[in-house]
Image 1: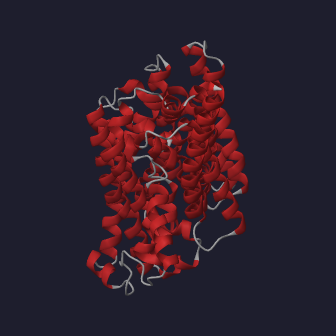
Image 2: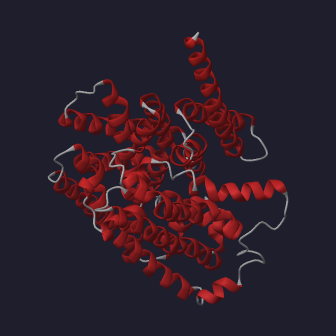
Image 3: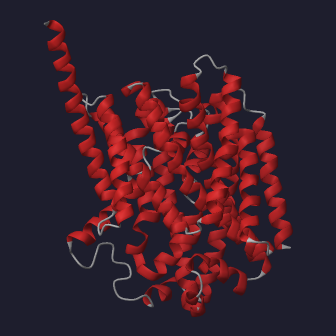
Length: 467
C-alpha cells in the first residue's frame, strides 16, 4: 500500500511537470515563471526553499541532543534569511529586472565580476543538492528495500526530469501541492504523537534543564562566535543565493515579492517546529530510538510504531519536502550556468538555444550531485558547507555593491576570492572558531584592500599619462 501510494504520488509530479512545460515560452518563463506568481504561490514556493532533508531528518536529531541551541542554524537561521530578504532586499532586486543573482554583479561591477560570481555560486549548490539526494535515497531505501545508491539515482532522475520540463513553473506548482501535503501530514502526526505522549505540556516538562535556553550557557568568546555564526551561516549566507532570489523574483510585483518572503519566513519557522517536537516526543515514548542513526529518528519512529495510513501521509509529506527543495536547488545553478557562464561568451545566442543550455545544465548538475551523494552521506555537514560557501564569498561584495558607492570591480573580485580561499584553508587546518568567521573577515579585507589599491593604481596611471 505504501509503495503503491508513493509511486502514484511520484507519477503525479511528472504529470505536473509535463503540464507546466506547456507554459514555458521563453527563458524568463523557465527561470522565473514569467514573473507571474500570485502572493499565495510565491509564499509557498519561497517557504519550500529549505524545507527538505535538514529540516525533516537532520534538525530533529540535533534538537533532541542539544535543545534550542542545537538548531539555531536550522530552522531559525533559515527563517531569518527569508524575513531579511523580504524586509531589505526583495524590492531592490526585483526592480532591477534581472534573471539571476549574478546579473546584479554584472550591472554593478562588470562582466568579470559576473563570471567569477557565477563560478562561485554554481559549486556552492553541489553540497546542498547532494544532501537532498542522500535524504531521498535514504527514504526510498526504507520504503522499497533497494540500496541507498539506487534510491539516490532514482529520486535524483525523477526530480531532474520534472524540473527540466517546466522549470520554475514545475517548481511552483509542485511546491504548492507538496506544501499542502506536508503541513497536513505533520499536523496529523504531531497530534497522534502528542496524544500518545500525554499531551504537549507533558513532553515539555520531561525535557532537561536549559533545554529551551536560546543563548549560550557559558559566556566565552568562542561560544558566542559559534552562536553568532549559527544564526548567520544560513541567515546571511543564503541571501546572495540564486534559489532564494529565483523564488522571490518570480512574484507578480515587488510588493508581492517582499510580502511573500516575509510570510514564508514566519510560515517556515512555524511548520519547521513540528518535526522537532515530533522527534522529541517520539524519543520520550520510545527511548530505543536514541540508539539508532539520528537522521533516521523520525523515520524509524513512523515505520515501527504507526499504521500504514499514517505512514503514507508522513512519507508523502517527507517526499514533498525533499522534492520541493531539490527541484529549486537544481534549477538555481543551471540558470546561472546558462545566463552567466554561457551567454557572456555567446552574446548573440537565441532565447531558444539559451533555454536548451539551461535544461542541459540541469542534467549536468544532477549527475555531479549523484556522484557526490555516492561518496558523502552526512546531511547536516553538507547543508552547513553549502551555506558557509556563499556567506564567505558573496555576502560582503553584495552588501558593498548595494551600500558602498566607492566599491569597484577589483574589490568585489578580491573579496570573493580571499573570502573563499581563507575559508577553505581554515577548514583544512580545522580552526577552533568557525572557518566562516575567518572567511568573512578575509572577504571584508579583500574588498577594502582591492578597492583602495585599484584606486591608487588608477590614479598613478592618470598622473603618468599627464606627463
